[in-house]
Image 1 (cartoon, one colour):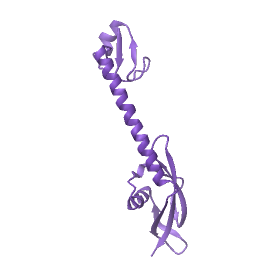
Image 2: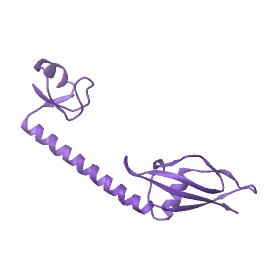
Image 3: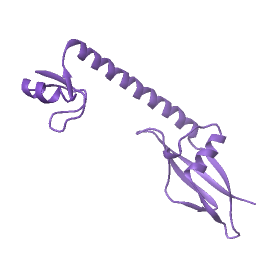
Image 4: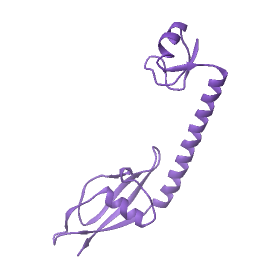
Length: 148
């Protein structure tokens, strides 16, 4: 019997795969548990349309990430923080602070997309990696200045 998997099954395949399985396995295990649906013409068409929508959505997300990367490329963000005489900060600059500074420059970005190589605890220039998509990464410069 031919079925379309609705979930990943370790020994059988991934979600969306069409597989030929024994009729008893399909009727007694896969179908009652909702792990698969029968591979009828209607279900196959529905699967193809769902896959096309998913691909279109992924393409749009990639294009949006590339557009945002073009805006961020080479950008320097200045953050003012309270510091002592030696240049050491009272606290540290976090990814939330960087996201807020970017928001002030017109770039909406989730703080979880920003990665710091080291914690920023003193005045100076630092680099942060911004992961916009699985394949799109941009490095921005963070300039920390003393605020009186």
